[in-house]
Length: 578
Image 1 (cartoon, helix red, strand yellow):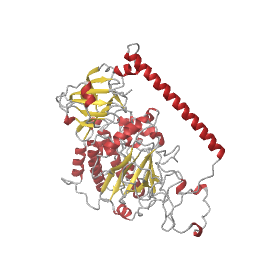
Image 2 (cartoon, one colour; image 1 turned 120 degrees about the vertical axis):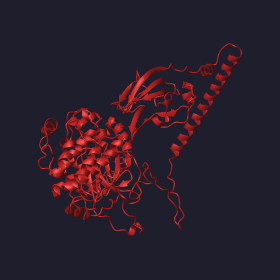
Image 3 (cartoon, helix red, strand yellow; image 1 turned 180 degrees about the horizontal axis):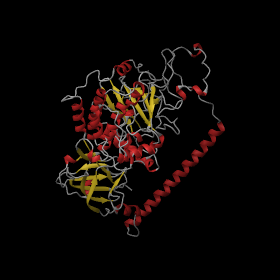
Image 4 (cartoon, rainbow, N blue to C red; image 1 turned 90 degrees about the vertical axis):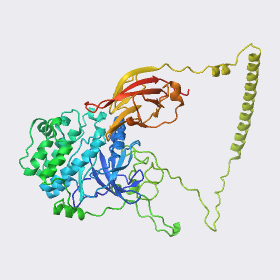
């Protein structure tokens, strides 16, 4: 969310803004950024939510969609006190979106713009809250990659980190290869600015920059053209001379150039406690400066959704007043605006077709996929029985011609059936006396042979990599949508799939093709904790192949990468029905 602390929080919808996203009726626009626009809506129970609608160019990128789906699934498991929870999403529709809890507070950037630099006491509490949020986010296997002042909200009970995982999804798309930078230059880490690998330490560097910005009122590496800022981040030291004394060690430990030398999140929390002269931080209710806290309490009330349909008027049509003239194109009504989830969106927020949406503050029937509401059949009113409309007069000449053609078609069909019957009887007689054979019977008698298995031993499937069984040879690939991938988070790992079917075989199974064909206990996720060395899993792919995976172990905790060791056997085309 962006905007002033005391005004301009809720922006009026414009002609190109949708009045509805799926089943969520939009009340206002909260802001816009490089990834999309953010709108205010409500759940069915009336709780305010922020809905981010992804930009069309990202929605059209297959790699982004696949990665975005994964990141949203991981983000939904993040339940921290200082994160804005992801409560709903649509990652497969033509226009991806996600809904998070709405936080009634300004961003750090908006607060600094209106109130100036924040006091050291507030910055310490801010850094401690962000560090705790990052612990939860990193525990879910997510690197934020775009932590910045506009992605941290200030609420009366502490900060909230938002947009975690979205930049990670975008970082994998073909858009990055065409020159689209992911992240904000003034708050990038050196390895990120140089195009290197990002890690949890990347977010620590960004945390130090957010702290410096809040305390100094400006970025630690200055402002100006992005290439100049990025050069200073990689090659020069920041100017921290204006920082309060209690913040200098904390920020300096975060802004170490080498990722391996930066402070851990645990160290950051310890430094915050030491700087506050406390063994354990306790966040007071007045952790924000008085002027900023007063601005939050005086924020305008959350607006109601924009109506998407006129109210029902029970009066007869003859007694209703004449409609007012249509407004000019510059003041388009809600009915003329596109709806995310309707076929109106040709090139902007294009989404799956939907029927008329029932009135309400959230998606019909809860958080499931929007449902088409079919128009009701005419029902009789009391005292006025329903009469069907009178039949239209028919053209007698056309009726006669249709009847004649119908009779001719029936005669031809009957002749064809008789000829077919005589032909089958002749084939049967030839088969009985040995003078011929029945081709259809012989074809059914020959079963399709099973395909030969292809075996690949000791595959090291790293975290975030896929096995695509249509490939020859089968080997780990990145950013694919098929068929099985290795996912880790919250200290555990799992084998998962989006389009295929997974099944864990019993320990006594022989791991044959027949065993995989007979298996019916399919799932989409199998935790590594449920497997032992030698355990087997069957995979039935959406392209008709069957694979058997033998689990042989995984990397140790002291290794730099996370991977599983597998033997894979593939029977190509074994599951095809043709």
